[in-house]
Image 1 (tube, one colour):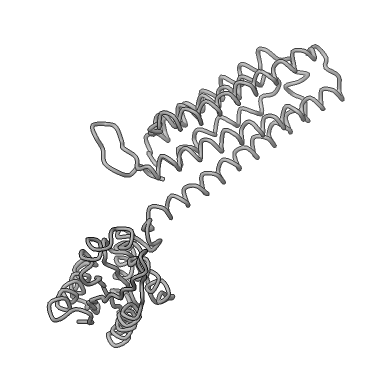
Image 2 (cartoon, helix red, strand yellow):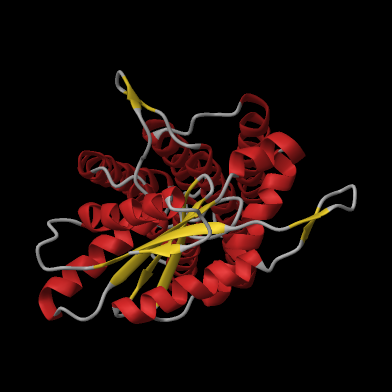
Length: 358
């Protein structure tokens, strides 16, 4: 999940969707860390109970377990409260600061084995959501130092009886693998959600303007390789400004959703539909000119037949003007291709509306 949006100075301004996704990733990752460490400490306690505590006192063990979890639980709760209250920016540096801090806390809470040093990989994994190669290299260097420091720490404070204990080391490795896997799953899950959020129109749930041009460019590249039929249409609701002015924006949104529903029902493996912007909808079709015009006429007729009630009970019907264009080898770009459909749509508007023009 790369940083999007505008830059002001050296500060990257994230969209609300990106900040919310980063918040969800960090929040769930913190709870995964707490749960995994709790399970790890429980397993270690059982091992030590079975094999004898040696020179490790029971009170000291319990104190370490409780202290670590209290601090990490506190960190998770404080993070949630601060985000909701102060609307934290969660830029790249703050994300890494939080995760490095939590990783250091987790490593400091363990002085029994050297195996938990694997957790130093955690901040590197978080660089996956930042996609900044300089930060990745920097974090790798920091993580190497962190792992080395943890190894030295364990060597100094713990006896070889425990740091070389097979079951303790095995439980630490297993915990680290589960923890890191859980975090990776969270990152994949929420970045997928972000991709969906940033490519769908919030009102109609159709693809948005950006997703439309991305797909059109992809289709154009395919067309240049095999020249299979490719068409595009743009539909504009007639006199839509009067709809908002007369009945309000809430009713206007209702009209938009009706047309979006028709486009969605007409979508197939051969069609890609999007809300181009405002009251304009677009469709990319793997179709010949004749089939594309037929599809456009179907959409026009279906929308004309819709009876859309207002809150007061009045029922209205509306029309749509549609422009269709067929791809040609001399089109230099997807935008040039689409401009032909746009020009056809304006011809439909000028020649009486509620019609399809090429």
